[in-house]
Image (cartoon, rainbow, N blue to C red):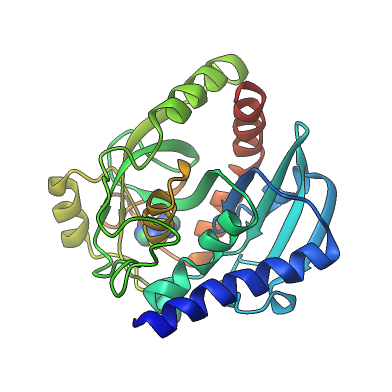
Length: 280
Ligand code: HPA
């Protein structure tokens, strides 16, 4: 990426924001990226305004099942929130920079805090269908980094610290909220590992990932978290465990099953996010 392309990036972000400000003038303070099967989280927003990605210039279109491709702006607990109802993935053929346009766009709209949600396969023994994992850290096995190329200096520094991508403060807040709202729900903390997909993993890959220290595996989120950290956003990540990862159960892995199981987590994730926003 040369300087000219960086100018294009800044202009594209500006144009995308302008398309939104023509419809509603709100500056948002929180961004939420909704994962597979979790789009119902946007339904919790009050005074909603929905804008299809096709009306937002430069916004990459989502082709994955369960990713609706809409921006939903509204209020949660009186805080202005922008939700990306649908994300794009590397397996859809997008470039690393395309994967994070939405994250940068949320930042352009004013978001200082980013909630990232996803569906994931559970690797660690206690992470099975219908449990939640608060993301403490990640392992990037995508083989790409959205910041390769000329650094967009207006967004953040070339080299930056990745020791606390997922805010300690927000993780502690989530624990506090969880003990208040569902003391009996099994919630763990762990490491999310991102692979490219679209094929699910082989059992040998899952054994290798476990040895590397991964607790859950998925096909998203890591590029977004990197880009958000680059811009100095405070990041919170949560995985809805939709299945046991490959080789850990007799189940055949398929997208429909994953989506259906992930959807079960939407109401509790809404409660967690609302609870956290009350305490922010
Ligand atoms: N592997 C990768 N991505 C996933 C999985 C999985 O088992 N479940 C949900 N997303």
